[in-house]
Image (cartoon, rainbow, N blue to C red):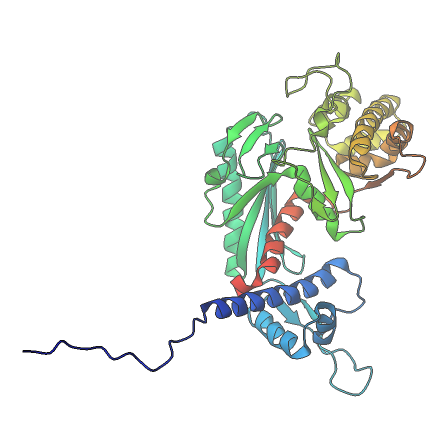
Length: 410
């Protein structure tokens, strides 16, 4: 009879399951890498430091050891996310400190925009410098969405090819549109001044890179964060349409779907002129760019500089048009300030140029109508991000994602 084979139990211990520990260690390294990257980029963005931070400064800011910071900085430098400057003169005995800055012309982000009268592409690098840009004027109200977005995609593809030929890596793009963009899906619900609705814009661009979509005013508001603004403010973008964004503690307040901030469709007079949205008496019909130009006796497609020239020459009709716009704007913004409690208003777009003639009326409206004005006077100021701010804000948002996840680039 053949004996049954027997199995002798192993006396060796089973190997320990280290996958959880390894995962935690990997997560910790990613977290620390992110902390170091943010310390370098936040210092550059704030402009608060007279000199960029050194490894020792980063260690002090993050609470990490100098040895850990040095290793992580070496990885960021090798990945061309951080650059080292010439050593600073030593203040005491020891090795001189090596300043750390965001690496220029290595990883870049694209800001894209379709507006009523232009298509725009702007490419920013990690240092915040514009490395490529293209803005084409046109008339895009009721233009075919596919064709218009295809044209923008061609401009973007050309910019990508140029920067890649110079050795730069493109991290992605943000597309700014003047309308209701669902923050969850990236779909455009409606853009009255373009005449577009129910549109997924990204496929029409034809770009082989990640693209996300956002409202134009919200991206323009984010561009202001690189300047001298408080942590919370209301940004108002004046163009043919009037959009707004609420920034709270340096972050956008998006609410449920990101559809807030449509101040251009606050009703100034229910019996007023019909708006492109279908309602009557919206703010855009009093303070929108085309409305102000027409009221000043200029063509609706005239340059804002033409209006400024008339204002500088004390043209009575031009001044009356701007006064009416300022009164309407002050009234609508007072509602926003009363509802949100945000007392700083940043005026961008065409309002930046017109502010010397708008400010008195806007201030008067806020002072009269804002309940808290006697205790915290509203502060109205011009935007500082310059022209086509949504392009800058969009590109910066792409690069902010890079800094938030540097491990993907190391």
